[in-house]
Amino acid sequence: GAVVSQHPSWVICKSGTSVKIECRSLDFQATTMFWYRQFPKQSLMLMATSNEGSKATYEQGVEKDKFLINHASLTLSTLTVTSAHPEDSSFYICSARRGTGPNTEAFFGQGTRLTVV
Amino acid sequence: GQSLEQPSEVTAVEGAIVQINCTYQTSGFYGLSWYQQHDGGAPTFLSYNALDGLEETGRFSSFLSRSDSYGYLLLQELQMKDSASYFCAVRDPSNDYKLSFGAGTTVTVRA
Image 1 (cartoon, helix red, strand yellow):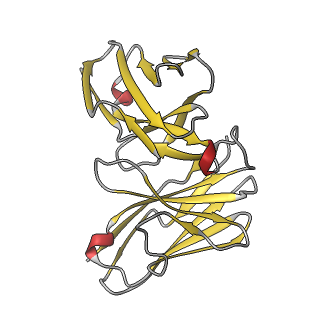
Image 2 (spheres, rainbow over the protein chains, first blue to last red):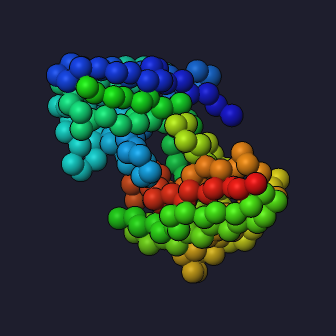
Image 3 (spheres, rainbow over the protein chains, first blue to last red):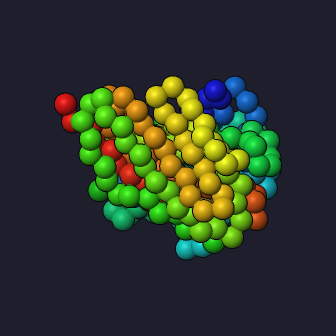
């Protein structure tokens, strides 16, 4: 299967600071990358979809100015949590999709555990 | 929109069989997927059903009935390492085939 690498795997930051999370597709070109947030014992909630070279599409209720997404190349997307607060503490997971259409599988990164203190 | 329902928890002993049901209500449908997620880890793909019937992959099998908007994941010969959360997910053709996940079923395997 395809490999998606997410970095860092965990991060602790002070309230008010910004944190950048990277998502890389290591052995394929990802036309689309997805960012999810998962609170403990809950499901994965899609935050945004990013396509290389274009602006990200955010799901309803997700603040685009707070969660900045950049998809500068076909192998790298970044999520920056700006001015982080304790309520932003969560597990953030990216996934990358190769191609488009119904039969394209999405592969997940390892996830990033963010703790804001 | 998408709505998927699955049980929140299941407990079973080693060697047993567990069936996790998933019912869905979707504005569009293109296949039912199942993912496994261990605590603190990322989801890993288990299976995908686009057509009705049973798909078998080793100890795990997945079933789909599109007319009933229903599917299930069958875990056989349970092992301790199968303790994890299991999510069903559907692809929405009206939304670029993005995945929508159910709330997840926590499976606990006891000795």
